[in-house]
Image 1 (cartoon, rainbow, N blue to C red):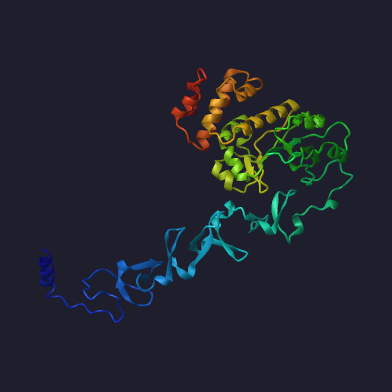
Image 2: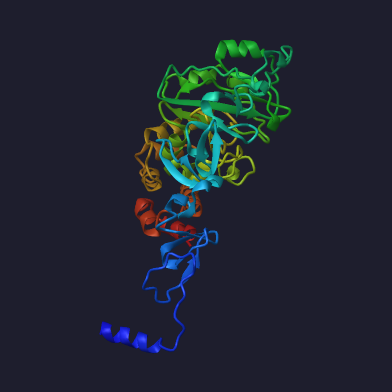
Length: 422
């Protein structure tokens, strides 16, 4: 058969002009009309043996030193436009276009990975820098270059005659004694106490800080010391400042809770809490769509640098729950401490597992919720269905069947599921 094809080709081409090779070419001696291109240096080559970069062709046999494979964008780029950049926390290096990178201290890093790298921080002005060459300002909750003193606390800035310390006065005390699980509370009130107090005495006697806060111009913020979440005497710390906690005025106020796990980054801590987020959103649903504490997908919470989101990872290995509403009373504070103790006893569980705890009347989570705010069965069912809706709207990981199985112990709840999972 091959001889016949060759014969036919020869017969059909007898009337054609013989092919004239270009002066500069890398074509085979038996070139037979295949598609050709002209390379960057003027040589005519078979197109199938070239690489095209932005309209310019390179011969795979002769020009391989002039181009490389971009491991990020999955395409060929010129060698002169390429760079090796750090890709992850293990120091993995990948080749990519220099436009995909940022140079910090003579080392290149991938732009879209900067927020994930432990050695890199974003400064207050938006620039990126090595963590080792920066300091974190508790006062402004942002990073500053070591040579930039604008983020450092100036003791002279605080008016000693003022009733309150300045916002983020950096007076926070640590009473956690190196515990594994730490917690701290920010208790905002929209009105000042009607009793005399001295901010220095309160700080020295209790470890609590009374500060100004822009969200409550006519009130104050009471910041707890860093505490051991499982300290049996944790409530005794708050008893000392109960008069401040029980002030009922909370308009525009919040009740942020900060947590950390010894030896874990804030990102790792948040990942271990993801199964609990839908329930937390449901408990404080009034703030989930607010401008100060908007609920988001977990992957966005991890990478967004926005301060005003439901849960925020801080550079000092702390996770801040901004979605928590204002503390109206001491009893409410006690409830929140108990809730977070249960949560941290069950780290890393999925939302389906949280649902099984909610529906188990013997479990302490069910008991905590149903003995207080959610004594009414219908109200409790609404709480759970709201949590399911948050999970489906934000993540949508689980099927209706899986949710039904996890909540099968709740009598009459199937109707709620069908309403939520439409």
